[in-house]
Length: 215
Image (tube, helix red, strand yellow):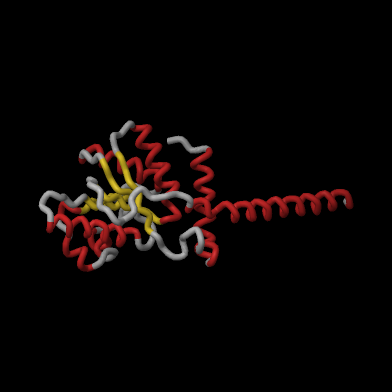
């Protein structure tokens, strides 16, 4: 019995050490999900067919609406410019136009014309965001888009979109513009439990998708 007790104690200590070591290592590496550079700096407005916003976190749809409105204002002063479609990916099956309008500024909402917005309610995660987007892009003839999502989500999102685009041999180019939200930045995520939880979970997803996932 004593030998068995010592075994369980030793096993428990080793297991605890491994868990602590794993968590410590993960905490050190988790900030790497913010190690990327967007191809779109938000200053210039490249010619694109659509602004693709991945729904699912606070502030993403509002930021997408604000970017769309900048294109809309440019079109009003330059007839040679066209305003891209605002494509909201993964709105959820119970979403509606009213749900969407509640998440954008009033001035932006009033500027929308019926053909300016596509609310995609079929996809439920980043993988299906990419799959359904490619299908819609082909149907609508989109060749170049801007991908928008939260800063912690962008690294994995653009990898998933790139792999699906390559797999499907879809002639689609995309630029990226991350939405910066407190506390999700390389220098701030560890200052709150929410930031720690979201960042570490996203890092673990990134490890899995980059090492094992193939569309």
